[in-house]
Amino acid sequence: MTDRRQFLKWSALGTAALATGCGTAPPPEVENVVQPTKTLPLKGPVVLSTWDHGLAANAKAWDVLKAGGSVLDAVESGVAVVESDMSNRSVGLGGMPDRDGVVTLDACIQDHEGRAGAVAFLEQIEHPISVARAIMERTPHVMLVGEGAQHWALENGFTKRSVPMDAAVRKQWEDWKKEQRYWPAPNVENHDTIGLIAVDGNGHMAGSCTTSGMAFKVHGRVGDSPIIGGGLFVDGDVGAACATGTGELVIRIAGSHTVVELMRNGVEPEEACRQAVQRILAKNPGLKDTQVGFLALRKDGAHGACSVVKGFTYALHTSEGNSLHEATFLSATP
Image (cartoon, rainbow, N blue to C red):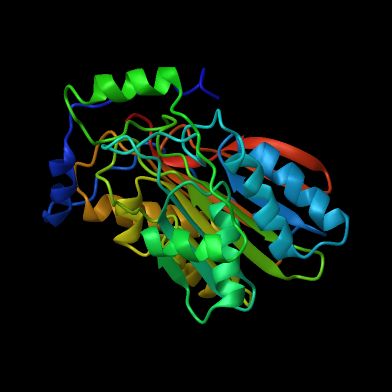
């Protein structure tokens, strides 16, 4: 994956680029005109997740389903595999640090009944996705954050894990501090959340999302990944969606919720993702050097994906196997 996405290629754009969304210019022209695919529903379970690391997550989720586990168990266990991969620089304790050299984690989970749990700005806990599920099942709350979230997790059976900063990561962090540019380049492993959405053989759905967030972010920054309706949204009557990429852009349009609501109104999954991407582009005229991707899974197993620029990959696991695909996109170049 790191060969395909050369690490740490920063653009010259600063955080001021986000402010361009306030303009009134027309949306950019679509460079990749592809008719949306009408995906035929699939029989049996379907597991769908973001990026190349989704293959390992899918495999674990599929094993859980085949062993009789619930779809909620499957989506938790699937992304936990990636959280435990200390070589992954965008998920888990091996992720890139923030501006102050601290790795902070965000995650959320939701089931087909709409129950949800989330954790944000969490430190030194290997599996934030499991903390999110515990919050959902053991408290009346949806989200806990920061020191309070860690304290609650430790009270509820989780343990701290300290992971020393990798020497190569430390060098990248030290180099970054010389210029301090916050805008992540497209398809680079510094903001590649893993989102996983699934439907089991009974039509029950669940989803999970977990990340270490944008590399070198301001300490305390939280993106879309733990936001129900932003990085993840599940409606058991309709379908599920998840997002990856620059979280600020996803939050501003309640991205995953938008995709699910479009499906509720009869829009095909891929087209729903495409319309969400178009909405981001329309509200941010002239947007460059960024990536946002959406995955959608309808209750009947139909699925789709779309991204701002070329390069967003996703993993699909069905009864026919586990495979990697590239999403359709609206801009051929960053």
